[in-house]
Amino acid sequence: MQTDCFAISKLPKLSRLFLDYTESHEPLAPFFAASPYAQTWIKAAPQQEESLRNAVADLLTEQNRAFGAGEKTFANIERLRSGAGAVVTGQQVILLGGPTFTLYKTATAIRKAQAAGAVPIFWLATEDHDLGEADHITLPSRHDLHTLRLELEGTHTVQPVGGLKLGQGIRAVLDQAAELLGPGPVLDLLESSYTPDATFATAFAKLISSLFADYGLIVIDAADSRFHALGAPVLRQAIERAGELEAALHERDKLLSERGYHSQVLVAPNSSLLFLIDEESGARLPLKRKNGDIWVAAKKSYSVADLLAILKKQPERLSPNALLRPVFQDFLLPTVAYIGGPAEIAYFAQTQVLYEAILGHTTPILPRLSATLIEPAVAKLLAQHELSLEDILQSHPDELAQRLGARSMPVEGKRKLASAGNALDQELESLIGWMTALDDGLGRAANVAASKMRYQMNRLRRLAANYQLQKETSIKQHIDTLYRSLFPDQHLQERVIGAIAYLSLYGDSLIAQAVDQAAQECPGHRVLYL
Image (tube, rainbow, N blue to C red):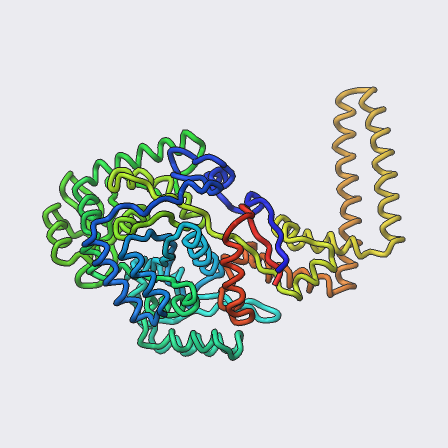
């Protein structure tokens, strides 16, 4: 496979904190425990009580058996029970497996686990309640992108997504997927995983377990009440030390601001690190503190004693927020490193103070593989027009179309426009110099008038290029194809197009290539020619 590599800073819409972290050969203290370049994160697994390891291993065995995991997964669970460390990644349980970065996250966790002698674990973020981010997937056809969205019966806007049943609407989604993907092992796997009785969590888990069975991937759904009971010490500290932890987060936010960074997660006054699942509606409600020991969720008041009683009797009703979740995760698991995307890495700079306060150590976070896949037909178009991925990422489609239109213009037209432009510049420079020598104000007026003349000259160039575009319609079609494939709607391919679109075409070999590329000898963005 041909590959190219370029600096991660070439990608759009990345935070300065993430860029500074990824470009630093030393840990960006105090925010991060390791540099992505160093191997210092490879250490022995954090110490855990044997009873906790055994309990977690027992639950993982039960869950992964239900997910249809293979023997390599169960062997890895036993390694975990015996003291092995874990490299962990995770995300929301997005419909049909989600965008391509799902593949890259998982592949990176596997590769880093291999390097560290650890086991790879995928953490299902099933307690997230943002259904709008999880209920759809985008798949390409030859001439368009199609967003497949699951229509659920009733309203579920504040309920944890993982526990929602897919219902009969999943049949229509699978029919659409079948038209776009065509028959094959991936479609068969989707149809066996995504059934009307399945939930978002179980369907996603079955899909990813099967795709990565050869690598012994362990999948965990910590929404289970028994996991919450095991992680109760973390949730208890979030209740009993709420004021102290909030103060530490505000100090961290202040330090981030002083260093020129911004906080990824807003920590409002009297907020908390917890959600409460409402007993009647099942809604996941943010808990806020009010008047010292009084907590409020949706106008209902709770004392500290009330919350501790809920934690004891119904631990699954208390759920960690985005900042506390990694700490909760790494209390349950002997995590040697977490694999994250840009946003996750940025909010780890805040979470670091919670790690130190609650666990006494900070888990290193490492960047996932970042890549763009270039299929043969797309590679041919890039070569034909002498373009690179960077040209696509750094140019607006209309601008790039203009450039190609001008490039395809007959030689005679190019010469005439160049001659006229050069002559205009030469005469204007001479005229402006003479008028400036006469009077500074006259010179400034001449500069203004000259700018208008140059604008009209550029307008002539654009008119000629547009005429060429209209004459050669294939250029515009090629531009549309390139952006649709590589930078859809001005977003990275890995964040838009579903991984199953590529897996259905390239199968297990693509997974193997992703695991190989996740070694990350290229610390930036990979361009992978399929």
